[in-house]
Amino acid sequence: MKRGRKLFSLNYLFASFFGALMIAGAFAYFNYRFSEYKFIDFNRWIYYEKSDIFIPKSEKYTVIIYSSNMQDISKILLKVNKINPIIAIDLYQKRRGKKGSVVYITSDINTLLKLIQRFNVYEVPSAFIIKRFKKLLYKQDSIIEKIRI
Image 1: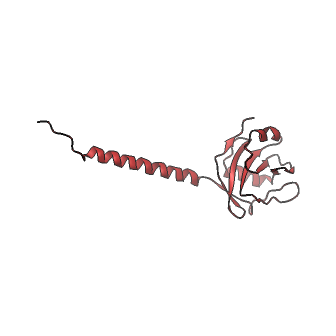
Image 2 (image 1 turned 90 degrees about the horizontal axis):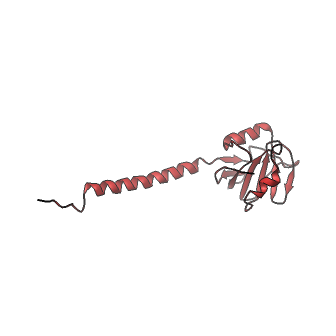
Image 3 (image 1 turned 120 degrees about the vertical axis):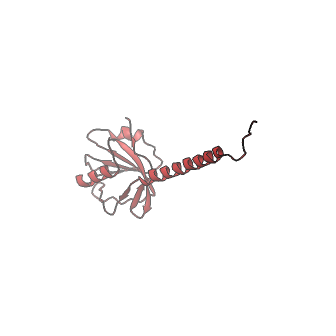
């Protein structure tokens, strides 16, 4: 005698459990990856434009980390999306001020090293977006991308 398959079998139960587990795992991984994004506090780390201390005013910025000793910033700017104002952080520590929507800033070597370490910058030029979290505290809002020039 041939037995038919029951409508509610263990296979269906395990399949639905496995599906729910995969969805929960994907959600947890997304939250973990987002929590990896770092903060930059312009109250604690001081950056300079030409002779003034840089104080951010916009809600969002595109941050470019480059070295004016190695790369031409005008070529880098051609490759970057200009939807947000740009903060160009020069590791060579030249103070250039502001030109249009691009603010050129730098700092002492210890602050630059903290920035590089915090955001895990391995190659320059690199870019990422930051978004205001509270007053002068900004949170990374995108992955760090290597700019190909």
